[in-house]
Amino acid sequence: MNFNAPLLRPIRILLVPFSILYGAIVWLRNRLYDKQVLKSTPFNIPLICVGNLSAGGTGKSPMVEFLLKKLHNNYKMAVLSRGYKRKTKGYSLARPGTNALEIGDEPMQFHIKFPDVTIAVGEERIVAIPQLLHDKPETQVIILDDAFQHRAVKAGMNIVLTDYNNLFTRDWYLPTGDLRDEKASYKRADVLIVTKCPPALSAEERQQLEMEIKPLAHQRLFLSSIRYGQPYHIITKEPIQLAPELEVLLVSGIANPEPLKKYLHEVADTYYELLYSDHHIFSIDDLREIQKKFSQIQASQKLIITTEKDAVRLIKFEQQLQDLPLYVLPIEVQFLFSEEPVFTELMTKFITGFKLPA
Image (tube, rainbow, N blue to C red):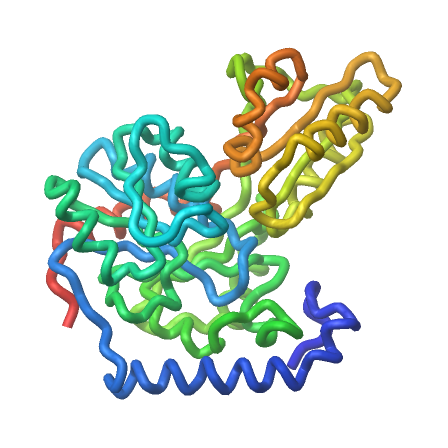
């Protein structure tokens, strides 16, 4: 148990007994699936699962978007998510006029950025997949967003992400740490990706990571970093260039804002922050708080920055946001060591050579 892991704060160490109990439950559940007491159901369609072993913050949404960018021009794609913190239950298909309260913020983000891709949500994927295929029979590939622990469905391609700053190998079970699955579950993955790496990571550091993670013979290990794009206004979509003389108010409700805070520290003169819980549903009082905090910044050159995930939860205040300099900072995945073509080819080969999982 590594209590030096970044998120193993002292207060959480007191929760070790609960973590041991949680870990025992997770272990038992996995053994029941391994022994086929609990069944995993395959589907006769390529299923690409993007998941992790920890609770949030590893970059699943940018990875789903990366896959969509690379594949949606060649295949009829669909994304199936749980729809975390939505106000609805059961299966739901995104349609014109759908909002984040109906399907969740991340699926709504996919729906806005990829209007030609089928976006659906459903807590029980084994039930939702047939419903999706009934509604969209032309679908050729389904991406399962955050479904690695959902073992009732057997995906043909499992991609597991782990944060460079909090590798699963150094973590511990919830609530002491952030693991929601046992470390050994990484062996079920086909692809392992270390996310949020420093862009200038050396070959020696890569080798150290590989020695620590110990990918199996059938697994491919990739390293990726975050690349921020040009901010654009939340309503008008007008782009803006961040400059050293700007003072920035960061408004964010994401699991791990640290990389974003570091980036703003590097590109802006000063930044202030209003941080909310992950998937926070913004209220009119929150908007007033944002406006008040922004008005207190004395600089003449100032703006507000938020994430794409937060933007889909703020857009409901469209009228109030028209004249507010609130800009959305897009994020992209960047594969290190020029391995993006290798990863893309691996996904393409899986789809074209798809066979029903054993």
